[in-house]
Length: 165
Image (cartoon, rainbow, N blue to C red; front, side, top):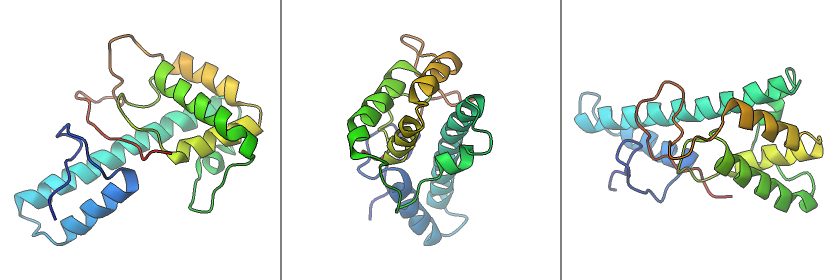
């Protein structure tokens, strides 16, 4: 199987998020630790995990600012069994998530949005906190015109698409 392009390569990859990471982990397990390919895979896995962790931390900071200090982790917890709280909220959640991606820098530029964050926005809508979340996200992570969003402390922008909802 060919090596899927990693975050530092800049080309699109049909595999995203957890599926991509799982594939890289399988490929890395089959390689010799001293091989250049193993080092490349290891770097890409580490980079993907770091960026996903940073995005999650951004969401946690905003939730804590909203007063959800104790609930932040449970609000951010999404499993295979997680579902939308109300099918009526699906469209509003999608619109709010797109608005967050387009008008704030909470996500790095050119990432596809994941169902994980759609479910989280749905929870915020059910709690009547989505608009407040957006307001704080806009203040903490404003979108600067013409400047792609970088993860805190990052120098180059990797291409890491989120799985599509």
